[in-house]
Length: 106
Image: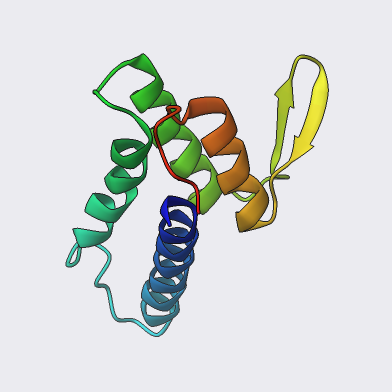
């Protein structure tokens, strides 16, 4: 259930961001108008961590990187490349690396 929620949230944020930028190219600037999606971004580390610890911040940074950076989505773990281009792979990585043991992933 948590996994599905995070996947759906990331996809909704990406969809919203694409629409906002499409409107911007047409001359409609609503980038600063709707910041409710930042709350959705914050919901992801909130689900994964019991408290606002150092890893909470790492998760926030990773989510922002995955959503907005136009780079290859590769994370290095112990000199091993982890391709997180697909949303499912990214969420699996977050759950594996940053989730607490009491989070149900289904």
